[in-house]
Length: 453
Image (cartoon, rainbow, N blue to C red; front, side, top):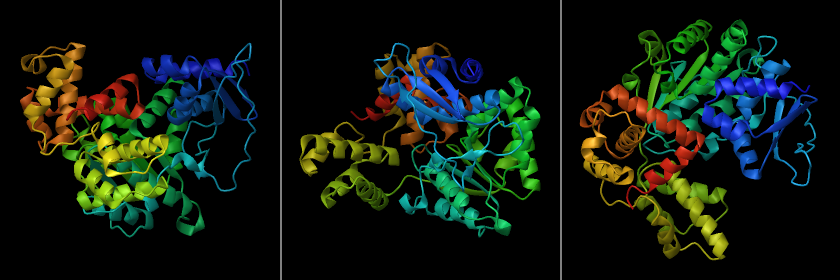
């Protein structure tokens, strides 16, 4: 039992980036008992971060060592303990009807997954002209009313791709499949798929990996497929997996921040198979939809949002849905801390930290802003230099241009003397840091939010 956590850490060190491993995994201590892996973190912040973002990766690695997927519990170490033990946590009884996921089990089957894997549902999704097609298509995949059994959802970051695909997962796991049996739904990101394949290769369990994905899945929900760019070994395995699933009549759903035509670096056969189904693009929400999103989120927060406040926020915040949610959360928190009602004056006080542009940003605006933030000249920004600061500045400009202009990836690349595949790679790199909330990701969030300050 004493070797379980050291071996699990070795696997995590080989599959996670060095930054993630050293910052979040290395400080943890752990013990395993009764099918539970109890992790002890040095403080509440680390415990919360690992619990929300790395618990699945830890469970996957531990499954290889333990022979079955454990339940992972993360808690702050007791400060009064001589040696930081993990708190005693009762083992929850196994649910009668658990959802399915994938790991590398002893037998090639999909083990159980707790229901909170899917945080979003259709009940919370606000439909408008910008996302109606994707919404209807996703439901059509669930109830098999769509003429295709494959869906590709594309949008800029923060417009609802993850919300829709998780809503599909929740519905499919609840609904019975054909012949009265529960559907086996696999939901994971492209990076998770790649990490599991790498782990399978390192532990010589490739055949189990293949069996788990190709024989024990009815619906595959795969996010951020642009992550597979320039990874030929992983692309080969994915292509063979999709062929096997297609031959069995399985349903496939993919999401990406890019249209299929922009996914350079993918094998032509894989790209053809991924884009062979129904394509649904989510655009930025219009004013009426933004207002209804705010009202829906206010109801979840159990606050009364005056009409003039929701109108003000919806009129001033254009970038994406996450920005709307972030502003509303800050407004609600400030009102509660000050013990006052939500008002237009309070909303203006919060809004000054967000995107309040009266006109669309131009690429020249973005270049000027990025040069100011990173202390570069425009000539240095477009130079051939590969210095880390220059590359980060260019990637930031790519991401801002993608978010705030209607320029194509080719046009953005031409402005910086780069191929459009370089633009895709740069945006993908920053999106990864933003989604993982790495130190760089948090710094990028502040940079992006301050673009109109």
